[in-house]
Amino acid sequence: MISKTLAIKYTEYATVDEMQPADRKLVEAAIEARQSSYSPYSHFSVGAAVRLEDGTIVKGANQENAAYPSGLCAERTAMFAAGAAYPHLAMDALALVGGAWGETPDAPATPCGGCRQVMAEYQTKSGRPMKVFLVGKSRILAFDKVDDLLPFIFDTLKA
Ligand code: THU
Image (cartoon, rainbow, N blue to C red; front, side, top):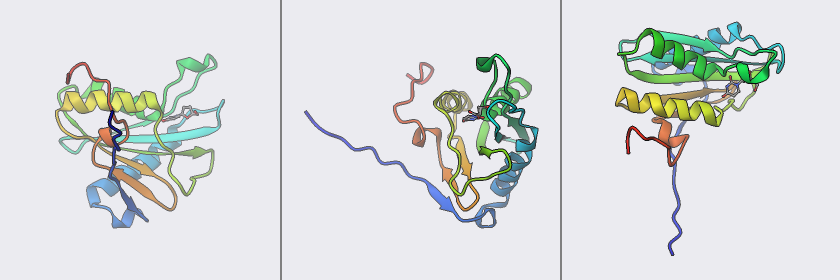
């Protein structure tokens, strides 16, 4: 028997001004995308933005429905839109911002398990690490790859 410990690495920024210009642009796109949230049931709005290998940014926001499971998270809205419109372009990075209507919490909202799984799949499809930025009011967390948000990824394409 052997006990093992898994370490994950991430970078914390205090403001977008500390970030690379391209990453800052992506974060700003996610903040902008949040305005398109349709969240009359949860009153929790989320914006996401995906950057493709050629620099194109695709935005998404959570979309809810009276039949609750029919809604979709912001991250998946953005990734599915990117996958559908630009199937041959790798997804380089994704930024996410969310909170109760009108609020951006100090600590960033973190993606649900389903969205992490979808990120993992597009990362594999893209054949390169997908960076993830989680945006809060007083800190932004940056992950170099989806593996750092979803250890032991279920991935039949990679196996
Ligand atoms: N939501 C997202 O958009 N992304 C996540 O990763 C977690 C949750 C949305 C779904 C729903 O519209 C609202 O936030 C409350 O759960």
